[in-house]
Image 1 (cartoon, rainbow, N blue to C red):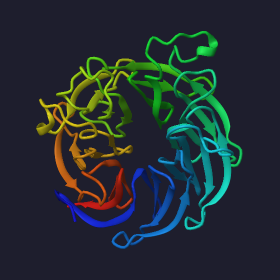
Image 2 (tube, one colour):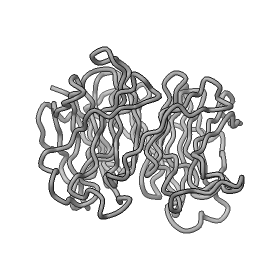
Image 3 (cartoon, one colour):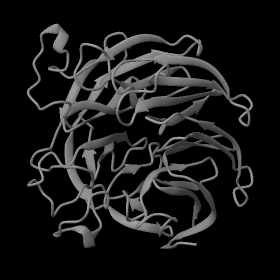
Image 4 (cartoon, rainbow, N blue to C red):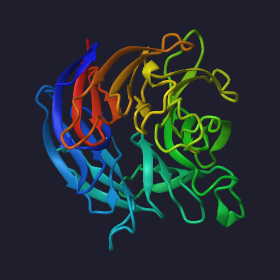
Length: 374
């Protein structure tokens, strides 16, 4: 049943571990971490009695751990997890018609190079993706037009200078350390995390020519990769803000800040050409000691319209963070699911809030928790 403060469990779904959960209408869509589990569709019209209504499999060597749904279109990634992709298969995006959520209809295979597509967002018309492309080192930003979802068309791309090796650029970093991780659109802006390269804000008013507005990076002195740049959709104290989540995985250098695990940063973007970090949130008990990886911050909810932000905190479950005072964020509520069968500890990976205010928390190993604030 789990335990927490200010949170009540509505239901727990025994389902394979996932990398992402999103809602569209009264259906939850889960992208799974490991084959053969690809994508699951869950009817949550009665959230206390969720029902799995569709399951899509994926072959060994690949995973579809990310999923987005809008306008009856479901987009999932296909990314290599190890070794070569299966013979006759592909990496990139797989697109479905989900006008009948219980019967997804495969309508397009969009292919790319290398490892495939990692993370992406989709607004019902355009997909903003992290993709490997021939001639570039590491994943870059690409914008795809899905006006006709059976025939996606590239409309623009952006990369950090040094990635386009085929064009004569030389990276100043090792291997794929600087790479697009997670693009999020708001209006004519794209907020993009760039792993050990920090993050960038792009002007996409002309999608064919994205332009850099600003770049922030604190690795080093901190060792953690930048996972997400999430704009806050309401002003606080008359200013504009975004949250920046670092991910508690392999640090850039093991000597960098092991006693300060990956945290959630508050950044002032009132002048978006000069983002200013003003504070961060971390569980006090994790500060000052070296903790196992995947113990601290991973991913906040991506649509922020109020002062409380649910965030997946890896081995520390769900943390709801009060951001009313950007200079002193604090915990407002929390939830620790039970350790799932077959695991040593919790691994909360992603979180979503639906139109009813219900919170969906997916575990990387096993299980989906449906929760509500009390």
